[in-house]
Amino acid sequence: MADRSGKPRRLLKAFLLTLPVLVLMAMMATQGRPLPEDPIELIPIIVAFLFIVGLFFLIVYTGRTHRYRSILFVTYAVCFVISFISNLFEVRGSMALTEEEMIQGHTPFCHMVIPMTVIPAALSRTIIFPGSMLQGFAAIGPMLILWLGASITLGRGWCSWACFYGGLDEGFSKIGRKPIIKRIKKKWTYLPFAVLLAIMVSSAATLTPTYCAWLCPFKTVTEYAEVTSATTLLQAGIFLPLFFGLVIVMPILTKRRTQCGLFCPMGAFQSFTNKVNIFDVRVAADKCVQCGRCVETCPTFCIDAESIKKGRTRITCTKCGGCIDECPKDAISYHIKGTRVGVKPQTARMMFVYPAFLFLSIMGSGMMAGAAYRMLLLITTGNVIQ
Image (cartoon, helix red, strand yellow):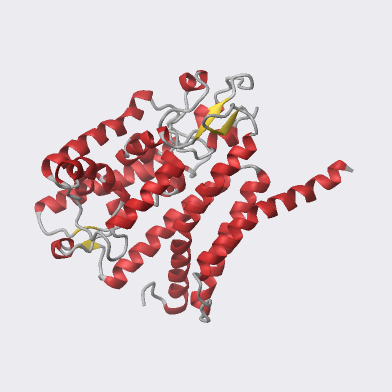
């Protein structure tokens, strides 16, 4: 009898836990306004709503955080690229950003710039980015507040629950069944901190965001400085191979997020916010059998034999839930700092997953609906822009 009633109870519990997300996402979808009557505008909103709420239900019902977070996270990144590029062509006619547009502050603020702004802001009270503080899409002020709130809530969970680039290398890491490159030496995981130090110092010295100007692979799929000189041509020549190497090729070969784990300075910068975040991921020593499956599958190289002995992940942990899903003995769990390890792990998990998933959903819902709208436009009109 217990077995027969167990599944309905689980379904009911999952549904009740999903209700807050359902209500909040419905509010986000309508934004206090009537839904559009035009099917081309209405269908994308409904599809995005059902997709997001359905994935949260599966996270709760199955207990698999990483599996369904990853689906949403990869979709979010792909939809960001589709909607962002489409909007650029609709508004500007090109992905290229002219010098005049940069001077006028028309550049959307990107979180990748944040580490480079710290020293100049402290020394000269200057934000070294050609954008608007308060006006326009992705203005500097609102984006900084958004990042600060996410950092306090998620720590480096930002990199697996908020970053609109991270889903790209995660998506490519899903291609293929087994890794071709199986081992990455630990020393390479310190490279992002070296890149972080280099770009912070060089940005302070030149008062320009050097990573954005020279090293950001995501210029390939967003916007870039118009190629008008040998310098801008060289910059474009660096962006392209970095994107194909770190975001496409290496993730396919390693089945890991190599851009995020082995190069990204923003990820290294976010690692320090794990110190102030109340959530972490812990390993219960009495349950762990040292099988190493968590080490082999962590997408961002955030757990190793040394950290397991200490009962925790490394400072770089992105809280994606991959090691938790993979552990055959349930020895790894989300944890609230200051509480005993392994006590009510499902409660700690839900307390983390609610804000993390809602942040990802709020960031991604508009982009998903926007990308679906562009695809419907393509099907009905033959063009992704109006």
